Image (cartoon, rainbow, N blue to C red; front, side, top):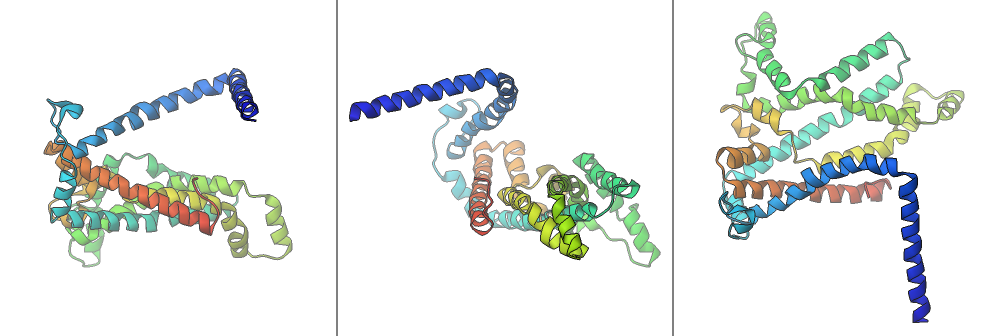
Length: 317
């Protein structure tokens, strides 16, 4: 009996190797194309993960990663004992949630709206105007914001002056930082983010629209009963990915918009890691803070994926 089981396992292994070899021979071009992205992730994503161990060491350049002494949870304890730690976590969380609440639904609404417009000059013009900001670099976007919101020469304050309102130093007020960051980000990414939803809408069976038209359904009823259910799997996947990156706000834009006057709301974990690690050369401490941020994102990703699978049946795994 045991001998027959061993023989069956061996036959199964041989068959799998034969099928794998046959598949490689038939589709070697695809495997060759796949090698470059796989190498990219291995070299630039997985191998650098080894450097995360310096969060548990007193790293110095002379001794290197392996030679530096272990200190356990020292840097994590130092971070959480720091009075600014919870302010950083709060600022990062509030800015991330605000950004998600604004930038997640807007592309869906834009895609649903464009889907209701017949092809023509107006639709193509709207698509071009909404896609274009995405291709403007972050530095240019920040420069535009600084110029437009300048209390002396900015066009916004010029318009406010026409109606008798005194000049406002928008970037110098901490309570305005989140709104400036999020709404400018929405302007930049909404059009481009809508592309994936437009692609999902294009895949909906047109017979459903014809049946709804025969039944006398209005446009809103078509959107609610056909469009939204049709793109719901896409919405769920994008939501899971967005929540999984909830604490990973774009560092460049926040850092460029920062100044001493708005630092109480603009200082987030990413900018703090940059200042501690690159500017102050406290590599181990900065790695510990960054690792903590990544772990929070991983936990959020797992939780949201589990909830989404239970509610909608769709998930990343």
